[in-house]
Image 1: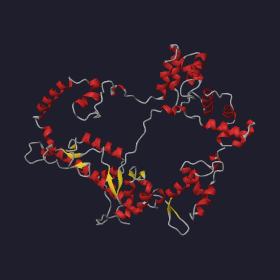
Image 2: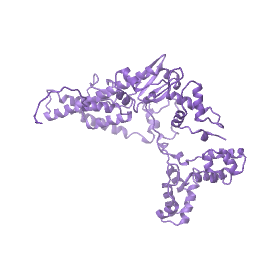
Image 3: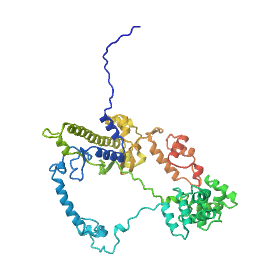
Image 4: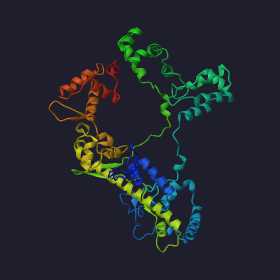
Length: 496
């Protein structure tokens, strides 16, 4: 076969992912905190971008996060004028002289209200001179190690014992359990066995009760001893029959201890009131609060959608760098090219953020259209819905809807929900409308809450209840939903 060269024309279509399109897709799937971090990083590397410092400066912002033109009557480029440093120096000198007259120790209580700036004055005319300063009552949440070290410092012990005690405290996990043994304590602190044992006993006598135990059984026994129940039936159950308690075998506990079921039930009630993780009381982990991306408010008979722009930097283009691109500018060509490139990048970022906000609004508007009964009546009226329903409604691809609903939260009269929450599978009924899986889970949770704790319902019994209500639900489906809700099996839900 002869080889030859040929030129052919071929017409085809393909999707080219430009850098701008990649940036828009990336911003679309970012959470609120990730978006703020991305904007801050861009502000640091792009001198053309500016952040509005006041509501007046950001009054012209489009969609609340981007601003391409300066507000009327203001010129953002003024701060770069040559005369600005002299004016700033004068202001700083006046401020320095005024600051020297302020009593900083009592500023927050008195000075702010005396100056008439609204400060912290209550307006009631009360005398605040006898009240402690707010700076004197600021505190941080104590951790478990801090709390135990404070108690250790109050004990009359030698320096060697203090070193051993601090080592033991440092080897407690977040639940308050000891993660090492006495042999390692002796090796690491170079102490004798008697000192190690004495300090272990001292730590275990500290507050909260149960600290320093090596396992759950010892933790519960330490708490019972603190209550004066070291020789009680509850202590016997923890010491010898904890495996029966784990499986809720109350009849087996009564038989093994030779007590009546009523006495065994009373001992179990004491055990269940103990804290299996005493160290969690002094956890220094800060709670993470969800900040909604969208608010839905009901005004009369209508629902209003509001995007949450609070905390998002207001972006605009610096007029100082924009003037460099004027024809009359004397800036070198390389400088103009650099500014032009950064200006283009800034414009794309602002437009991508605006597009992101508009897309979120359209998606939430479509969800409100499909799930209006949910916002009116609650989870029981949640309709089955998939990504394709919203995609066809607003004319976008399913992948775009998936990115928009990832890590985005909505605040409504029914509570705060992730946008993914509204997309769930369908459960068929006998001759009726299909139900959403989330509404089925809510009904299952309600059934378990109202069951007889002495005779909890099995998965098969719960499935029969749904079938009597004309809802097709298999036993294995009930088990799957029960596990997703964190509900224990029937034998572990049994109460004496």
